[in-house]
Amino acid sequence: MIKEIKVGILGGSGLYQLEGLENITSLKIDTPFGHPSDEITIGVINDTSVAFLPRHGKGHRIMPTEINVKANIYALKSLGVEKIISISAVGSLKEEVRPLDILIPDQIIDQTRFRALSFFGNGVVAHVGMASPYCSTLNKIIYQACQELNYDTHNGGTYLCIEGPQFSTKAESRSYRLLGADIIGMTAIPEAKLAREAEICYSTMAMVTDYDVWHESGEVTIEMVINNLNKNIEKAKNILKEIIPQVANTSYCSCQNALKDAIITPSHLIPEKTKEKLQFLLKRYL
Image (cartoon, rainbow, N blue to C red; front, side):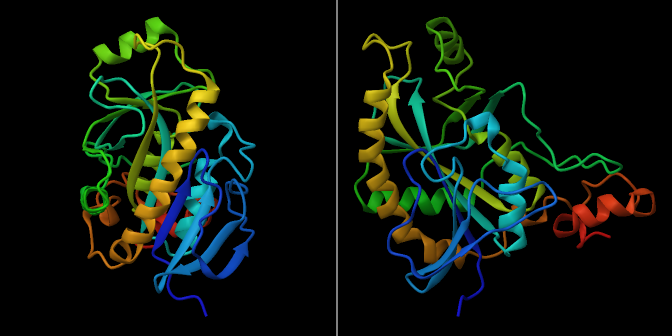
């Protein structure tokens, strides 16, 4: 019997399944926002129930902009998930952040253009705080595990999220460095924003595959990215085995109270269809 599921894993490029899971069940979940990227795998690791979802789908079928992030986050929320750990392949914008390093970001710069950024609308307005887009509690747990495993890890930094699917031009890459970003990727937005609206703690293990094209080492090739990606994925799996029980047992966090005082629209003015659609988000406040 599956215990209460508090931890969700969003697998990134190269991480399409999570080894070590026992009592595995695969769930096809429909949400008011459509289907998630793939079936959600429910299992137990180190006596802790976890939900695993590959954001690009098994076999990497879904481009970053095509990911139905609303469905992914809402599906995990409907299962009772309170904490999400995201695995993300990224490029480095800093000399000291080297390929095969891990960076645990604490800030985001959004450079996307075509993505739906909020669950809200259709008769209800909410303004959640995003000053600290990542959960500091989860970040600390991940960093400590990386230290114990002797992985080269950077605690804190800014993740710049681009639309993709193309990599940056050299001019773009240089401009992102001027903005003060440390790493560049394609999936932090809108995941971080939607997780906050869903009152789910959210943290990212950013696995560095390359220096972005600003670096004198030259062009970023898919061969280079995949080679380093495979090396990084083994690290990610080792870290997850260490931290999942601790993550599940963390105490209440302010991320899980993000909608308090954020919903501006009076309850009686919110359309019933919208209330029904957002029931897992709004039920505490209506």
